[in-house]
Image (cartoon, rainbow, N blue to C red; front, side, top):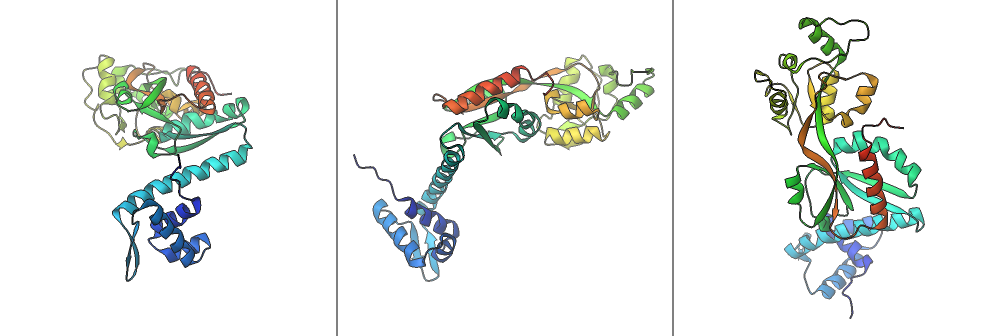
Length: 319
C-alpha cells in the first residue's frame, strides 16, 4: 500500500512559509528562490488536495486547514531533527531521553545527580524542558515527564503509565539567625553546639511564615497535624510560586518555610538553612516518572531504573 508521505523539502518549505506567512521570508531562511518555495507548496497542496494558503494582493495567508497542518508539521520536523541529531551524536549507540519536568525538582534534585547517570550510562543523554501540567505525549516530542501531583491527578492523566519516585514530605526550615533569635525570645537557652536545635511546633506559630502559593493550606495542615490549634499566622505571609523562591526567602531570614528536604540539600549542607522543627509532614503530592502507556524503549527503561534507584536513596548524601 502506497504511503501518503510528502517530501521533507516540501514540508520544510511549507513550515517556514506558514511560520512567516511569507514565501519571500521562507525562501531567505532556506536559501532558496521564492519560485522554488512556491513550487514546493503547490506540489504539497496538490498531493493533499487541500488549499494551505490563500493568495492575496499583499502575499499569502494561511487557511484554517493550513494553520492546523502547520502546527503539526512544525512538531514533526522538530522531532525528526532531534532524532537525527541524537543518532549523529551517538553513532547508533545509546540515545537521548527528552524529559518534561517541574522546574525546581529538575534543577535541585535531578540535575545534581546527573553526573551519577553519566558515570553509569555514558551513552544516555537527557534533554530537559519545563512542564508543570499533564499533556498528551502524542502532541509533543517528550519521551517522559517528571511530574509532581496527587494520585488522583496521575490517575486522570490518560494513556500513560506512572512510576512513583517519592512522596513530597515537607519540614519547617529557616535561616540559622532566625532560629537563634526565636530560641532566645522563647527563653530556650542555647549552649555550645546547640545553636541549631529545633523549636517546638507551638513556637513556630508565633514566627513569620512563608507561604507556597501552590500549597496555600500547607501551614494550616502542618499545624493541624502537630496538634497546634492556635496558629493565627497559618494563612498569612508572603507567597511564592516556586520552592526555590521560598528557599531563597527563608535563607534571607524572611520567615519559616515548609519545603521538602530533597529540594534544599545544598542549602542544608552549607548551613544557609536549618531545620526549625524536625517533625515532617507527608504531603498529598508525590513525584512521578510518567511515560506513554506502551512498553518503554530500552534507553528510557534504563533511565527509569536509574531514577528509581536514586529516589530510593534520596536521603543519602550526594557523591
